[in-house]
Amino acid sequence: MRLMPQQRFDEAPAAMRRAACEFQSRFGIAFRTLTYFSEHTLHALHKANGDDDEMLGSVLIASKDDEGILERMARLRHVANLPKPALADRLEYYDALREIYRRIVVGVPAAERIIVAPEREGRILAQSLGMLRDGVDLAPHAKRIPFQHGLLVGVSACSPAKRAQGLLFFDGAIASGATLISLIDLLAEPGVPVVICSVHAAREGLRAILRHAAQANLDVRIHVGHVTEGLSPKFYAVGTSASDLIVGDLGDTIAPVAAAPEA
Image 1 (cartoon, rainbow, N blue to C red):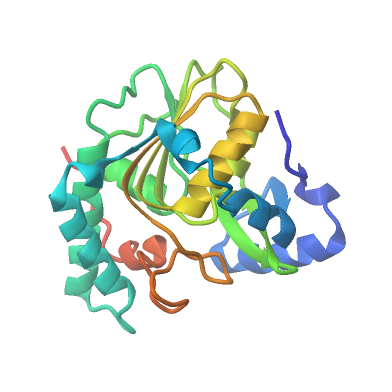
Image 2 (image 1 turned 90 degrees about the vertical axis):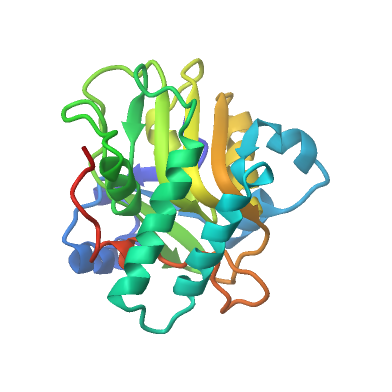
């Protein structure tokens, strides 16, 4: 059930296509759809309305019971704020991400679900843990694109080979929530349970996803390593200031050191 203004790429307004074409050229990809989140829409989805306790009841936050995750989050934050991370920094960052993922996927059933692991970090993390199945699971490109003070999300071809009995989304980190909402709109439907796994989430992004899920009558549950509050004006998860990144750009950081899938 699509509630956001999502449209085919070739039918989108020219200004949106121009903004998206820069990203297509930079990453060598082709978007099938574009979804637009205006600044007003994002602020409405992100706003705290005093209903967090009830709304976030379907979010399992692993760091509440696992201090080891907080230690690894500190490593991620340190590397994310380095001007030029060295190879050793990137390896440490990648190892911390995978360790957090190992801890949050315990008990998450995958066998009856189609896994959706967006490029790059979602696919890299799911593949490194040996969880992606050829011909079954999906690894679409999903890029957030700044547009008129809001965000466009471009998604490449993303069609499952069979009807999903359940969906399991692998995402490195949730900031605005726009990318996951766009993918959920493409793939989910009432009666098909959705589980999201993510190393980190901004509370604003969790609100956005769960508010959208409620409007679309979708069953969405989220397993996350750690949650913080705060988004920059560009909708990145931040701490004490707009330049204090919590995890930064996971794909850029780990792509040079991502190893082959584990046995």
